[in-house]
Length: 117
Length: 112
Image (cartoon, rainbow over all chains, first blue to last red; front, top):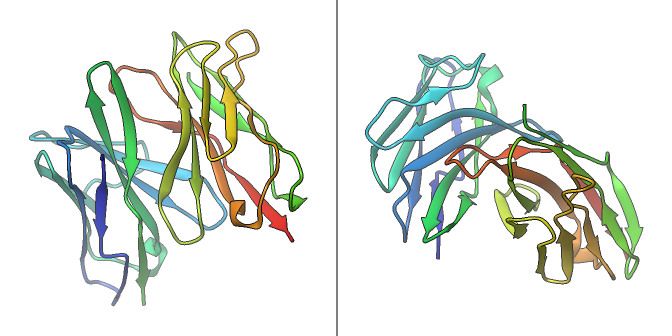
């Protein structure tokens, strides 16, 4: 249980275009989802926390107009990289928090490799 | 604030060697502690977790014990395999619906 599906797994886009990444919780309802960015050989950098039905909370230094996050349902959150540029090339990972009784945990998507050319 | 510190990598071991990856944390209250593993080009997979002091998490031969007195959650495995080569992340959560806080990750390379 607690499976998260992230699509696409990789995408190449032209500079100036927008790219949407989807994160779906397949067998549970995720009231909270998280979006991370990971540079090579580095840890995960939290970009934003997404709560269903409300605006995302962005970490300091993350441009909210650049990285649009929508969490319209309890099973889907999307990250749209608008007007992408080569410096936006990175590995993006989503995560969803699950809760069951007194227990809880975090499940991660398989990541999306974005290359902007 | 809350933080996690891991030993720096890369760690290179021969197959069947003993593994220890150190993890210490700073947190208010009583956080839950996690170890995640990331294989190349993939997302993170939960390896094990512990939710209170003296709990031992274990999975696939890996173990870690929640030590409140030393604020540590060191990862151990008695005999590593080549397939264990990956990056390992220690993380904590404050149990209040909040985010995971990650250490910097430790790359493990196991040679045959």
